[in-house]
Image 1: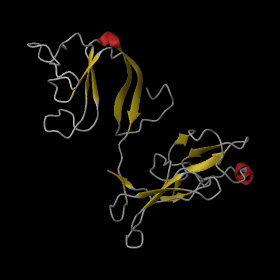
Image 2: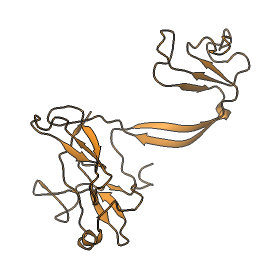
Image 3: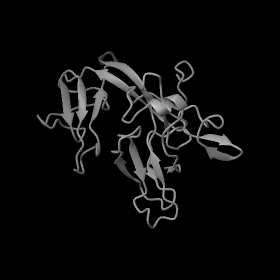
Image 4: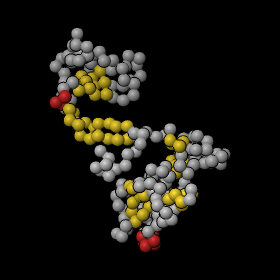
Length: 218
């Protein structure tokens, strides 16, 4: 999955299947016993919830605050016939709650509005930076090192994100003084620079963003 596509494994991650399903005539329930529209029984007796009643093809479970509701947060869809389901994608994702390294409070989020290569990027920062002993600031996307990625330009002026740090003699520096600390590369900005003149950075082959302290993820 990773070696063939040239994508680095993200480490601690989760997987989900994105499916296309034919629901047909679906029963809708909250308590897994009766249909919310007809009040008819949802499952056939003696089938241990394996077969729907009333010639229904699928089951939609609605969330609700009621004590009898079996689903509390998100709507769920249950398919009983494998032929009615087709797997479209396998998605890998991570779940992160970004906290300030100093005060451990959830960081606030803003969008960079100043013209330049970082315009429209999301920036996370400590909500209590005046009182925090070690306030964290992070501009997204972050590289695999957990630091703000830098911006590089191609000859046509389009930009992409890469690791903005190198390790040399035990200290962090901005390229080109050494080898980049990780092989992060993100083309998801659509290949368009967000503002400013790319020429000086293109000629120098330099990145253009401010290094920041990496938050701990929980």
